[in-house]
Image (tube, rainbow, N blue to C red; front, side, top):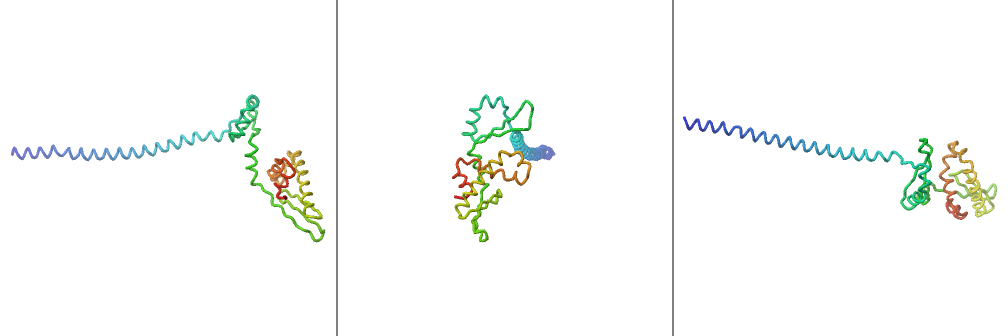
Length: 202
């Protein structure tokens, strides 16, 4: 009986070990699950931190006029060499009217997508050549192809000058406002030959 009791006692003593083993497995599983959950939360936390940090991208850092005047050399240097775009406005009055300072090289690259596709025809009825620029609705006629090109180039230069002299008026007319990038490309030219090149009339 003593032996049986000892065996029985041994079984009783071993039983908690099984429970402890099961509990250990359960704890490990719980820890593993918590670790997974923690991992997901950590990843989400990093994403949220990045999103919070990136929110500053949607709030322009506007430089006041006084600050711009006092640091104009540094500002221009940063724009030209650092590819920065500076926004300036009246910060004291919290005005929504602002101006951007951008490198002319970058501006030219942006405007490069606004390309002219000239059409040169010979009109049998008038016995003249026509050089047509549909992008800005301008065309010129001449007895020769070369003359038509020169006349059209002169007309584009004249219309571009008028466009920017009266830009505020043209900005109120939707179809004229849409031509702004094309006229800006022409205005960015430094010579008549460059205008012809931009117009595709070389």
